[in-house]
Image 1: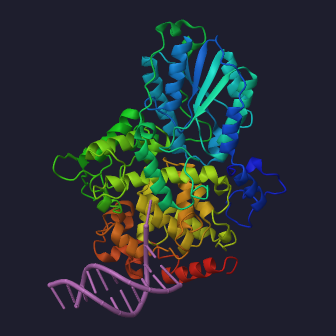
Image 2 (image 1 turned 90 degrees about the vertical axis):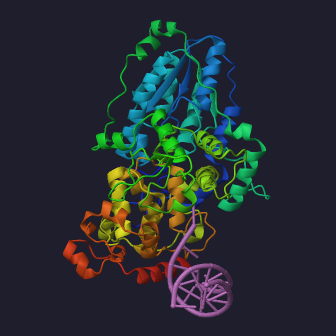
Length: 577
DNA sequence: ACGATGTTTAG
DNA sequence: TAAACATCG
């Protein structure tokens, strides 16, 4: 069973496993959580970088860019850009290094699909880098504990002078990188870690009291102001890496790396529908850019079934609204190809969010970033702001990823522990069509429409009253190809009302009215819930028991109104039944 | 990034 | 009479 993130940081005494027949993983004690928040690992990393004492080395055989599973691209990649500039300056070749770390993937509940997506992207990158005579060396290292020393001995084995990497903001990754920096420093290798994932780096924005933002709206205001004040800083494209001198291929160690293979699998992460995933989510920057172009430039097209055709070209549009332009009105429609579908690419860093914003601004001829015009583009840029926000929250309040609710007052909310209910939710057999369609979409596509995510998550946490942490783990672990710890955690805590959302606990979706809005004709439901494939009337949103029985579709597990009252009761008075 | 319910308004 | 709006949870 996978362990929860950061578990190894807690003393065994302070580990408290909630009494729960369903494993939600380890939950940090309030004291441990407070301690991590008081001095977040990101600050520690930045401090240890300041303390690096190594003098810039002037001889060696390589500058190394260590690519990780969240920055898998060559273009607009800050660490890679800096590494390349430095390599050129130092007259040494640039080497790209990647370590597959199965224990980390297990600890972070990565899905086999996500791991497979990583491998597929590595294959594409290997070829693209080779064209620049840059070797990509991919290895597997089983033990996450010894990974830092493994990385540093690799650096020594290629006689590296410098190490470049983009910062990963998860707690375990930050702690790993602190150790790597210290070890590299001791070994005389100069480490450089840079902010790259977000438009605005974590820690930069703060309230008038100097505290990190914990509410989205004011965060977004500041976020926009910062970007518009200095767009060149925040939206600039990082320089593309220069080619190595071709003589690198003669180097006894680096030369061999051109012919080494990217592993085809990672032990314990067998992806059973590799081929289908490769069709829906092709790897590589070209695929990501094509996805972006489709969103910005084409009008959505729907298949006969009503399911948005994930690979359909769409109609190139000049006058008609593109999908991006229609985003404001269409984004809550689960039955349409209404969203960009870029999340797998953004999560893996195959495309940068900077590039997304640049392309969106260019489309509407705007020079300022805004989120409130009626072009649709503004609403889409807001989604990128949410992405930044949740990583800022994770960086400033790392306990949210250690099993703690952002709002501690909800730490004692009583959760139901019915394993049959959880199993029904996980497999898409809750008897609520929109919820089941959502879950089954994730199980078949590795991806879920954003509105469907909210509806499905809200149903688990408020109707079934099952712990959000279980949903958080399972959604990443089982099916989803686009898992990002910060966004996933933020989304789940939003759904569970334990998060940063200042709206009170009574934000409870009515799954049936949500269904009518997200899927007015039932196309989405019929596509993913074949039992209901012959139901065309409005009853598809909530099939009468007789009809459900006849079609072999399950009856609802709970009555929504009763469940709603139960949730209201429990949140009003955490600890009560 | 809400829902249920009651009240007002447009037609 | 239904859609829009306001209020409260």
